[in-house]
Length: 157
Image (spheres, rainbow, N blue to C red):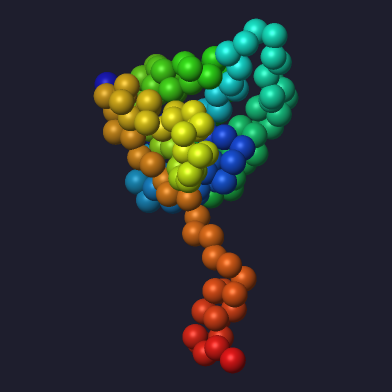
């Protein structure tokens, strides 16, 4: 049985914040409870230590849970570890194990050469999951000049 529960997979980038904000808004309106998941990635080589400590991963999840609870959203959190190439499978598996109705991910929208070197976790989750996958768009980036123009009524001097 699938319950009214969302899994939000977070990271330490702006994309994770966008996914959190989207999930808070959606869960507050729909009454869904949320499972916050952070997958600590291990590099392909066993000789290279992970970039993130277990404590840092837990802190990320705990701060997200605080934001959710402050917004009145029921949430629980999980930290797990996986090799870079199995992160997407781990996200999907946790969503199934936790009986979630959908998976929420952030989007980093990599451009140029960065697009070729990205990990493509979002695409892998979409391909392997039978659950709906919601991709929260990143926040808009505006230059200081554009903001000044917008707030001055569009008049340029």
